[in-house]
Structures are given as structure tokens and as C-alpha cells.
Length: 401
Image 1 (cartoon, rainbow, N blue to C red):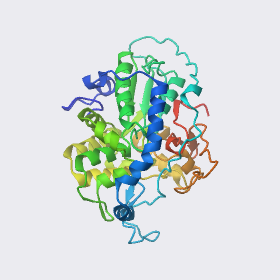
Image 2 (cartoon, rainbow, N blue to C red):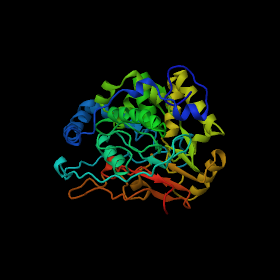
Image 3 (cartoon, rainbow, N blue to C red):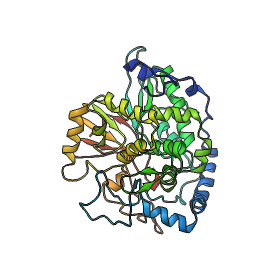
């Protein structure tokens, strides 16, 4: 299946996968109105805590929290000892503390950064510069600001980068105020970029799998490998926003289900997660993408859960042996460096260690200046921790390091 294609199968060729533009992606989207978007986000900030408190009664929430830890389901009552966990189980701290930005500047203080000018490039097969975007998680205003700063969109939020190439690394929704708005923007930019001779594409993150599962399977029990789980409960406990679910349309579902899991651009192996679990789905990039697409097409809850579970694994490249794990992926799929999202840079650096870190009085959250290069300079982390008051990263590759 081809990313962004119509409902029927398509021939997998580089040209079709790169440039086919589905009709639904050409729908107009509201222009870049910073003040309106900021006011909507203020309303979201004050509402999200109430929504979370109302999602479950105290007893039901307590029971569910015994089943779910972060984005990986397990039976906490069993209390696995280190080394005794079931196959594929990788416990983590509760994921991504959300820091309220009460000291955030108002819309009147927002300054528009002058856009860089792209050099004129001949039309045709020539490809422009390559950009990548880290995890967005519904933070549409931050995304628009970051894209505008790089000169990829104009003041109205339309594609302005000619035949430049833009890759999103996944996780468009959940936790933030406007996940569906983010998806709509990416779909529209895909059409506008293709018309200008460039392209805008996206990878499938674990939160896309989670949202798809919550919509398709709801409260249907799945075999998590360590207890009974449901997509719906996992989605809510991992930042699922009811207003996103209410606005979710078939075109969004079709678009997400056709996203690729792995891509290779200019010697950069692009993935969402910092895990070697991709190797479970094929020995080539095309095999991995086709296998994941086939699983989603079969629509089996247990199979989909297993993909979601494996794509939530993290930190494979961080500690001892991390560079070897990167080399294993590069040897299989090609490239000289891996570029990923998923694990926030403050987590990778050990600056945030638990749910409450950085949420005290006077805390401004972690400071993220740019991507994190690690694992013997073979890995580039792109999740700047926007949900933790970090930074939504949009950078040009290769890095000038």
C-alpha cells in the first residue's frame, strides 16, 4: 500500500509513493491565525485537566493504572523482577509529564521570524533540501511557528519551499490541543508541496497506531502479552483527546493507515521509534512497510496491538551497546545515520526521570536547543519534548555537526 493513496492498492514505485496526491488532501485548511490558535490553546490548557479527571471514576482509573504503565501494558500486580519480564516487555517511567505553560507569552508578544530564502532550483527531477520534524502531539501553533521559521510555509500557512523535502517522524495527535488540525495541515502541505515540485511525507508513530486502534477496536479486549488490555483505555491514559476523536474522519483514518514505518533519505534512515523492533517486520524497508500495512488491513485487534506494543519500545540506542543496535538497523536497511522521534531528548539525557519532574513552582521545563546526536554520532533524536514545555524541532539534514 502507498502512503496517502486512495482506497485501492497502488503499485509501489518511488514516483507514486513520493508524489501521488489524494483528492482529499487538497481540501482547504484555515489560514495561519496565531491569535485565534493561541486563544484555542489557552482554552485547551484549562480544560485538559478537567477532561482527564472526568474520563474515569476514581476506582476505574485506579484499576486501569494497574494495567497500563506509559504506552506499554503490563500486569502491575504481578510485579515483575528485573530479568523476569515477558518477552517484549520494556517498562518505563510514566511517559511525558505535561507541564503547564502559565508563563507563556501571549499572542500579542509573538514575533514573526523572517523566513530564509530558498535558492531557485530548476523544475523537474531536482530535489531540494531535506527537513525533518519531530513529534508534534497536537501542538499546532508550535508546529506552524517552527515551519515558518525554516521558511517552509508562508504567513498564511501554505507551502513556500518549492521542491524542498519535508518528513514528519510521526505522533501527530494526543496530549496537545489540536491533533486533527495537525493532521489536516500535513495532508494539505503534502498536496501543496507536490504541486511545487517538492514533497511532504510522514511516518507512522505509535500514537497513530494507538488512535487507529481506539477508533477501530474501542474496548475490545486484546492479549497484551502481560494481561488484558484495550486500545480505548490505553489511548485515554496516554493523552487521548476526546475532541480529536470527535473530529476524526474516514479520510484521516485512511491516511494514517497508509503511512510508512521506515524510510531512507540521503543516507538518513528515518524511523519514529528508537527501537530495533522494526527488524521483526522485515529485512528491507519495503518489507517492513508492506508487513505493517498488511497487518492494519487485516484489522485483527491482537495483531495491531502487537505492532503498537513493539513500536512503543525505546532507548535501544542510548546506553551500552546502543551504537551496535544502530549499526544493526543500518546494516539491514541502509543509511549512515538513523533519525528518530518518540523518546524525548530530556529523557535521553536523564533530565526528566519521573512523572513529576520539572513540574514544580518556578520550573520552566527542560531546555532543548536542538536535536540530540548520540550513539557514536550514529543516531539523531528529534523529539524535543514539546509536551514537556520543551521544543518542537524542525531541522534541515544533514546536521552541521
